[in-house]
Image (cartoon, rainbow, N blue to C red; front, side, top):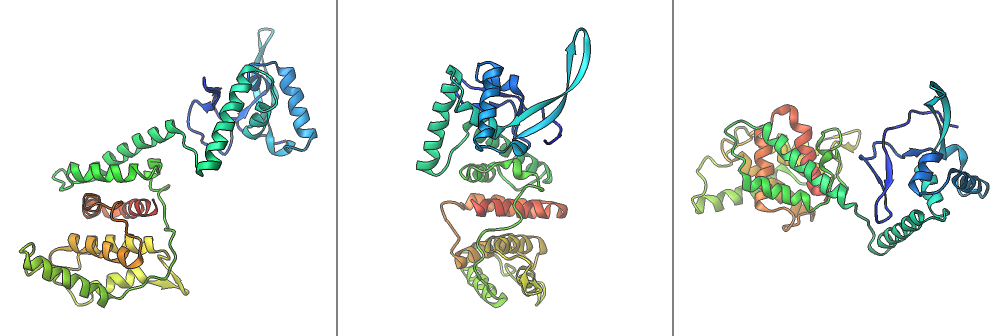
Length: 326
């Protein structure tokens, strides 16, 4: 029997029968004692105890993996008494819910069946309350990003709103904006390599086009040194012990954007060249979805990277990975 610290999460049943929590789940499960389970399904403790015994005897669940022992303080005859009480995890609570004969348990089973049917037929289930909370967390995260920028930031609200909208459509938890939770890798491990010469030629075509439209000066994409672009591509494609440092397409693309913008390989046009290189490589790899990556979104990402402190590198790269992983 496990002896662990009981968390403070409180479970209850909504009007529709769903088992819900008063706060987000911080651990892999939740715990409840006999009385709490009886309260949840509005029945008596003896009935719950009988169902639990049958669950273990039938082998449906394992006692050691579903029961924990907590020290609980109770008032008995005007004095505090510390006793060890058994608590049961979420797996057992759900199993009991399918056995109890009460109105609350019936509502639970109806909700559970509906939820399971949705998951089987549609391939996913959504907790609308959590989705709404995640969007709120993202809006907070965007404000945190803006707070990192200089007072005279060139990141305009239109671009930021586009970035918010793009992330919102991915149904991702932007609690992950905490750099410790942002993705550190991509998903596409196909070997999509390129050379500095290929990228330089593509940027040269862009330069000619911008010059013809008078959208750039002669300084645009003029390398500061012969090895500037070569060094960036080398960093993106570097390996150690026959293993790529950035093994996935998404990681290579994210770091290409970051290094192009932050390392200033050109006298002028580093942000535009970086954004172009990012899109160019995504197109080359077949990952670019034009409906997903709008010009405003790309503008916001590029400017956020350009104006972010160097210590925020992992967070900026993580944001790009989060977007690309959809």
